[in-house]
Amino acid sequence: MASRTSAFRYRNPDRSVPEIGRELGVEAVLEGSVRTDGRRIKVTAQLIDAATDRHLWAESYDRELEDVFAVQEEIARAIAGALSVELLAGAGDPVFATTSPEVYRLYLRARHHLGRRTGPDVTRAVELFDSAVSRDPDYAPAWAGLATGHVLTSQYSGASPR
Image (tube, one colour):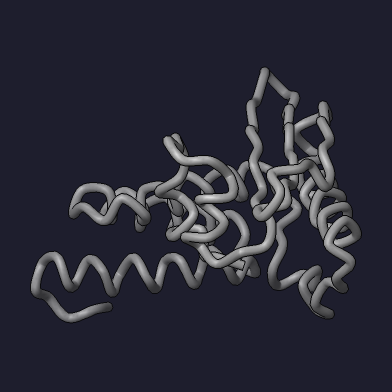
């Protein structure tokens, strides 16, 4: 599995799936989109064999936004089934999940800003992560993002991390 950072450069690809698969060194490529419409989330996902460019699995989901975590888990299990792999034990542990769609939305926005790696974006990411952990202090990924944000802030400003 390639990292999100490596894969993100193919967001608007001018290459075929087999070319992308070779460049990333992966056997399958996951494509998809996520949209929100009021209180609904619409997810379309398809898993493509990188060598043959054939669909291994595809599905669309249209659910209440509060069900975003259930949709995530359902997609992960469907992909694991299509790839005939077993998901890691503990991946669904409470420390890695939040029950609040708002906290998760803050976390995703923060990750977006953090990934841009500019001073103002990192500052915004820290603000968003801070807001997420204040709403759900048990959400470990938000704490990890906040720590990363502080390290990057210190690198951009020359100050020592908090």
